[in-house]
Image (cartoon, rainbow, N blue to C red; front, side, top):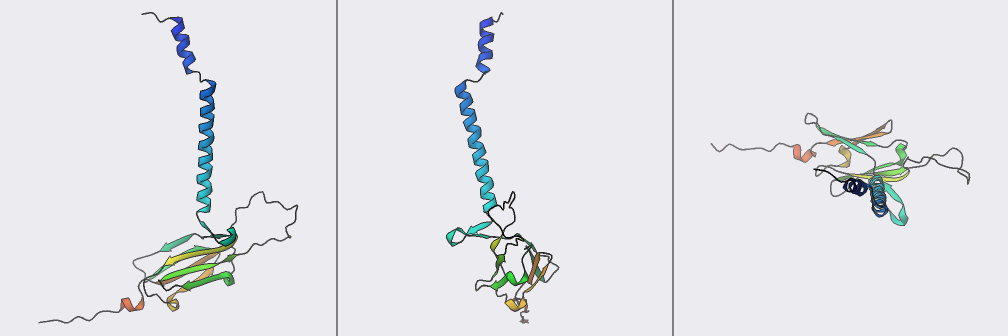
Length: 172
């Protein structure tokens, strides 16, 4: 069986992309790149929530430790660069702990028209984080301390009323 030279050339030419095919591939690559950029942008801003007039309210990262051997649950909240005076803790009526405040920008020289920020990754502004507490937890049972930019908050595993033992009677 002999393969003709024209069929070999036609086969090789079919593998060479046409200019139209190359344009579609370039468009596909561009759309894929834009989609990835959109996803990255959404991931970065998912921690932030918009307030009125476009101001962002960001959510600090939290780690909650719930050890069965401990009578308290501990939450550690990342708040580097935040003064203790700028942190507010409030217990809501629906057993939530609201941690809020503001990280203020600290700029040594006053920014002028010639000031540039090649990288600006530090989040400044208002923040808020809401944590669910056991039903009936009172503010007086919550303890909080700031150490090295970490706010450590702890509360009882169960509210005081739930830890009381229930008396049972024997019907013999």
